[in-house]
Amino acid sequence: MRLGVLDVGSNTVHLLVVDAHPGARPLPAYSHKAELRLAELLDPAGAIGPEGVERLVATVRAAQEVAEDQGVAETLTLATSAVREATNADEVLARVAGETGVTLTVLSGDEEARLTFLAARRWLGWSAGKLLLFDIGGGSLEIALGVDEEPDAAASLPLGAGRLTNARLPGDPPEPADVRALRRDVRSELAQVARDFKRFGEPDRVVATSKTFKQLARIAGAARSAEGLYVRRDLDRDDVRSWSQKLAELPIAERRLLPGVSEGRAAQLLAGAIVAEAAMDIFNIPTLEICPWALREGVILRRLDQMRTSLPAVAD
Image (cartoon, rainbow, N blue to C red; front, side):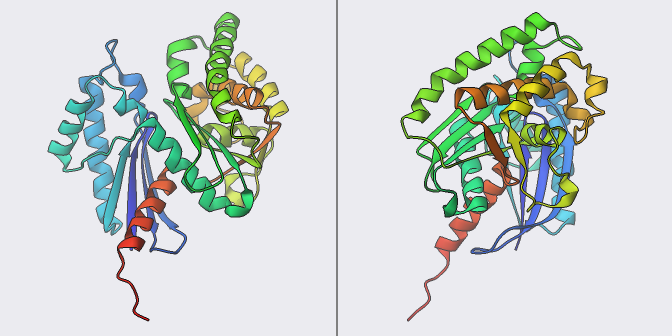
């Protein structure tokens, strides 16, 4: 069957269409993205303003039409930190449902981490052993660790690249003092949660998902996306440290010229690099691997598992 996942994130609204059935690997069939940047449309009180709500409704309606055109039988919906933390979230969700007929499912940070972990586990398989996962989104950082498909530990921190850029790095390029202050505060927050993870022991393998890590790996020399999903892409801590320092000195216009850096994400890349460097330092990770599957794939896999358990048993 053809499934769709409509993901309303802090940066983009992304509709992923896959052909899938229980027990099989989901095959991407179509991808539709629209940059919305909800995190930048919050007013001082933390509410999504009228312009943001109008744009969200229009974007969801357009994605719904694309799903229909692509023959999607069922669309799974999710909204992450930008919506769940908005002070008028209930009003926004009701407006979207009333005008489009689409009911957005708001994920908690813990659910987001666990579903992303599920996707990474299925991609890498059981041979990966104890898995440590990082995902830097626009609004939050997710961390998860475990040996099974359900992690033993999961956390979501307000350290998203978009959130930190808007709140802490106003300059272009930002002032060195602002960069230093952000580095210090990010490391302090990560150090508080790292203890909870370290009591489960050292991981056998460390992976990262999300656009931030993929772009950092690309500018550090990893293979282009055009070379395929199955090409291994690693990211070294020394490269992240070096690029974090370079990005702090580059204006946004020059960051856009770097290989693999999209125009819409260039402004956020420095904050993302600061978080990535801090995570690798605090958790003592010299190298991590980029995983192509993330939250959307986790949502699909969970739905396929539910469908599989509902199938009638085969008689002996």
